Structures are given as structure tokens and as C-alpha cells.
Length: 452
Image 1: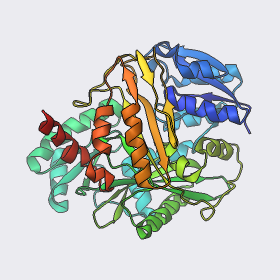
Image 2 (image 1 turned 45 degrees about the vertical axis):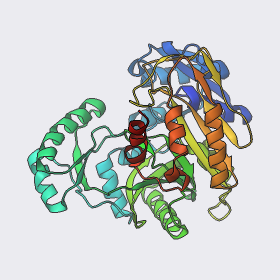
Image 3 (image 1 turned 180 degrees about the vertical axis):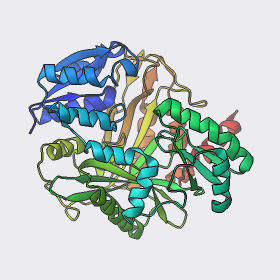
């Protein structure tokens, strides 16, 4: 096992990794920007180094400075967390060149899944169902309109290098497509340095379901069940749960089998997630692969009683998995909500000073929090301040605990999305487990109009 690990991240995920490392008696190295000098992860790590100014481009995305700190501190490995450099193939390759273990898959695998267009081709070759669409880049709006005439509207226009909904738009006709193509292409080029666009047939009111996998260097692949992540705003998840209340056991088994096929086909090693769209008839289609630990990994930990960070470290140290698909059983139900510093109506970020913070406590309640009273939420980073995770023997019990915990959650000094979350998790559609990716649009936003 490793003696010292540098954590190339910040906030709650850095603290999450530090917690596991402390339990395993592994030394930790934190990195921080000027804005995060008083961050909790800085205090909790064994060592901490400033890596630059507040903007991510000058700190958390500064590969050379992070590698410099890793060498200076004597770290054996780097854990990238999620976001930032976690799916950067160049960073994974640079770690390897510097003799550092990148705790994640190989640079080659990251690159192969980083392009959504290439990932579609790869999954199709692996025998994983994909949404009907194109297998090559669409060059301009004229070509896009020709393709749409064959596929039929509505169409999803997507950026191959996209993420978080950037470069993605639903279009209903030729006129909309012509306008959308150039704008989304420019946006993708600006955000990702890659304006490659492609198109897929639109799946109406789908569920967003993903499968957590872990794979080792010996070729063992274990799927750790699925997570329902359908409740989203602006294509960002806000509520996740495991297992999915929507899919049948037959669909679950087929989805797990497909995920194993995908992972073995690309030679994937470490933790990763295969994401799917599932239609009303429970047909599922590959959406994308996240080659890292997911924000919502705690709900999988709660129902499997595994520590996924620990398993990541063991795999990266080339230790074989100590469990099999058959030995891991689902235990109860877990739900996670992401608490953001944002206006609960407009969803715009709400930076500022947190003057008071009281976290609810009780049976089945877990927190992954990156702040404390006195912490500043800055405009430099994602405004997620914490994750509230609940577990219960049944989904009904988990829902009860979640609702009570949200009512007791106290944050002062900034706005949060807690009112939005309470409206969501007390809605009859959520309580019945019948939420699609259109939930916010169909149920939450109309509630705002009704209560004005």
C-alpha cells in the first residue's frame, strides 16, 4: 500500500479521501489555492502546499505545479477526486512519466471515454445498447439538417467533449437546429477546446440510471449495483439514490451485465461509472462513462458497506479485489442530496460568508461537507457546499429521515437550495419513485408559480 498520497482536489471530496487515508495510516498531502488557504482539507491533511491563485486555471488545473509538489513532498501517488484533473488523460500520463501512481484508469482509457463520439463507437463494438444517432462528427448545420431528416425530430445535439450539459440542446425542427448548431459548437470550443458535434435521437422523459463498477488488474470486474440520478437542474444532478426505485430486477441484471461487457472491452481498471438513459419500457442506452469516482458514490457505499476510496487505493496498489459480484448484496436504501449555495428559484450561485452552520444528526444520517461556520463560498468554484446522505432499511424510511434532516439543516449567511430540495423530496412523484429527468421542469417549477 502507499505511504503518502497527494490529493489533487479541494473541499468535501478532499476531506473524504483524507478520512479513508487516515484510517489506513496513509500520510496525506493537500494542495490549495489562495482562496482555500483556510480550507478544512488544508487543516486535516498531514501536509499542505499552496499551488497558486484562486482561479482553477492558476491552481487546481496547474498540472506542473501539482506534480512539483508531489515530488517535493515525497508522495507515492495522486488521487484526483472528481472534476478538475480527474478525467484529464494528459495529467494521468504525466503522473506515470514522473513515477507517480495515478489513482484511476490509464491515460489511454480516459482518452477513449473522454470523447462521447468515440465512446459511442466503443460501446457499440462492446455490444452495449446505444441511442440511434451518428457515428462520425457533424461538420456544419447543413449536414446536421440532412441527418435530422433521416433520424426524425426531436433531436439531441451534443458536443463530443461536453459535460454538465454544455454544448447540448434539444431541437424540434430545421430552424432550431440551424440556430443551435453554431452556438453550441462555439460554446464547446470555448469550454473544452473541442467543437466536435454529433447528434442522437431524443429519448422522451427518460430515467438517468448509472452503474458503479470496480475493476482490478487481475481482470476481475464487480458491478456495485445502480444509482437513480434522474432529478437534475440544468443537466446537473441534485438527488441520487441507490438502488433505483424504477427499474425491475430483470432490467437491473441486464444493465449490470452490459456494464461488465463495457469495462472488459476497454480494459478498464479502478472505479468508474457507466451511465444510461432508460425509457418508459425499460430499454436502456449508453450515455457516457465517467472514468473516476462520482460525486454520488456515498449512496453506493451505504448499500454495499464498502469504502470505495479504500478499494480505489487497493486496486491502484495492484491488489486484487477481495469480493465478487455474488458476495456483494444490496442492503437497504440510500439517498443523497447535494446542497448548493444558490438561489432556490433561479439556481444562480449565492457566494458569501457562512455565518452559521448546523448539520442534522441521527440514525442513518451521513454528511460529506467541505465548509464550516465562517467559511466563504467564493465565485471561483462549484457552489456545492455539502452532501447529505441518508440510509434506511427501506426506501420509505430513508425518505422520512431525509425530509426530517433537511428540515433540521441550518445554514445562514448565504442562500441555499434546501427549500428546493424539500419541495422535491416531499412531492408525491418522488415518494412514489417515479421521477424522470423532466421532474424539475414538470413538478418543481410549476409549484413555484402556484405558491406566488
